[in-house]
View 1 (tube, rainbow, N blue to C red):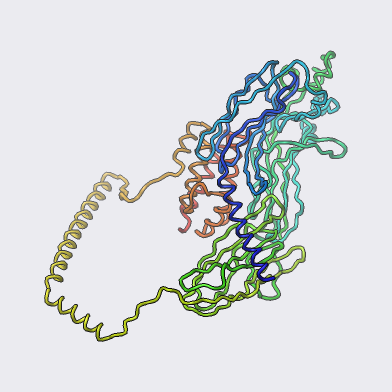
View 2 (cartoon, rainbow, N blue to C red; view 1 turned 60 degrees about the vertical axis):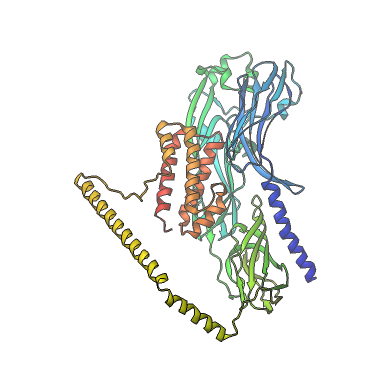
Length: 628
């Protein structure tokens, strides 16, 4: 059974190594699809632009839609899937289009910027005929996105009657609701929070403020800007529902923590009842196709409002006091299983051993760290390396973490590695659980590398005497190098003293002219210099792209990592190593999320440029002031 168990865990380690290369070696691709390929002139078509296997997508530029009306979109989708051991990561945009006329149309290649490359998609064609291709098309076709909800003629809430109170009408028919699967949890226990926009009105909506989650570790369960909607009934009335954000949160500290409000700006369009009363012919058609293009301005009333969700408070309970001290508790909350395997139990002092500790389960897996190993005397160990395979879209996060400990043994003999203990808190049992591995015995034999020992002292003394005799016989071998060394030292000292005099003189001159003197070694570097230029030029698209690049490069330089590897996990780990306060770490992650929202979704807001720049500049100054 022991041998069988070892084989299982070694196989798990190998599988982790196999899965990762399948992902990293996947080819970057960009594809456009249109569905269906043939439609009627009054029908809609779905055009999808999909980038596969890109680490970072900077921009997606769609083809020209000059012969079409954009009914919905762009709607963003992204995710990761694994089929038969092959992992695929994707990000895409979807448009719902309605043709302006019949004919055969060709969409030219779209352009995407990803991983520092510019790639083109394929061409796609669409045929538009006079007749509808499906009698059921109106039921099956997408009804639009966040900007264009569907309506039925029975829904009269977007019709504005004369003398009607507009604000009361808006309050009843469009609002933001926050759902939390629980409002009380332990530190480290996940809660799922969803922000939704409910509406029965025609509106153009954009998110102007995302909620911040200070005090929590955040894992988003859907990509920003995902604007597909569903329908829900509240008190017998049906609403179009848009999920603004869905995330799982892991509390980092106890207390009552507020989840801030989301803010959505809405430009609501009402159709006036008096205009409808004059349109006796085609009344039903007007209700079936209520768009701004078929209603004149005098028949419309627009109202601009900003909606805010009500704040939600989460009560986070501290973990209970432990009854005993067996096993070191390091913050793991959930349900876990601990097992270990050793690469080989017999090797020489020339070789290195490898101990693998495998933790599987579900909980705050992203914060699970390597267990402590009490190494026997005579064994030298090194810092463990971690590999992980986690499903962050499950609640709680589930998967496997493997920690590999390399070690060496200087002296031959038999050693016993004691049991490894891993302590975690199980919220379901409301108690601490300590899991433990079995002790492992290893046998070390002497390797081939041996130290040479001098056993003849006479030989050693005679060698030393011969050396000193030669040295004193040839004194110039000592005197000449000493003279050269002294002359060189005097020359360098005089040169340095001269430079110091020149530097002092320059300081006096600068002071006399009221100039600020800076030594050559001081570099006045502004990490957001190009971003500041784009801000001055009010070029909002280039501003957010430049801010994304410069801010990520600054973080990479400050944290000592490659810019391509910047992600939530790396930021949290490296910031903690360098003593960066947790609130600054949270600000960094929130800013990166907000920048991506501006870059990759239809919610880009040029008015937020100054706010984004100020936030990034404050973080830069905070990190520069942090102890290195």
